[in-house]
Length: 199
Image 1 (tube, helix red, strand yellow):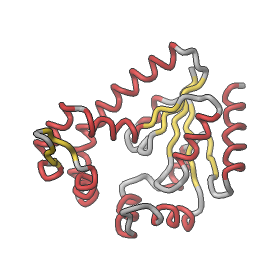
Image 2: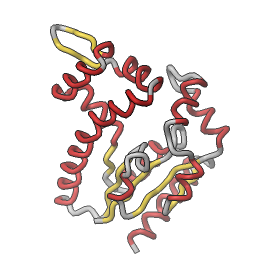
Image 3: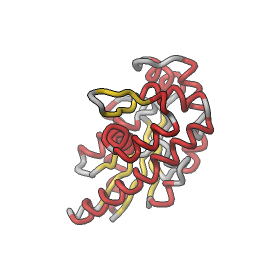
Image 4: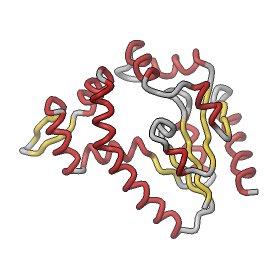
């Protein structure tokens, strides 16, 4: 099975590109979605986060829940806390990804895609046969990101500071998907990429 690692800086069209892979019947492991599920449902992880980040825990009906917005605000201001949170969550994400991949292999798919925002930052490219980076001009990236709920210019630059920059990602990629020219153009690029990988 061919493993494609899909990544890109915030606002670069990675999620839209992941959806294009799905349209071509390629299963996609969504690392962000996996993290959300862990933070919502994994009691062991919730308890560990409660030990280290008690201010991010809210209680409802005698059950503890993580307020992701509070947790996000804590870790984006403090790099050491961010690294600590990653140490708690990443092993669980890796475990879920392995289970998912075993399931996908049993379904006899030829290609599987890992949609991982911090692919290079977590050395995830070592588990992939090809790395695909989504990219677009900076003005468009900024426009997309600042259009999101609860996003500020400060927060945007803080996120960028904690990610490997777009130029470096493109240098390390096997394929670059330019997401700045509309849906059809992106779709054609993904189709060509899949054809090339399969041949």
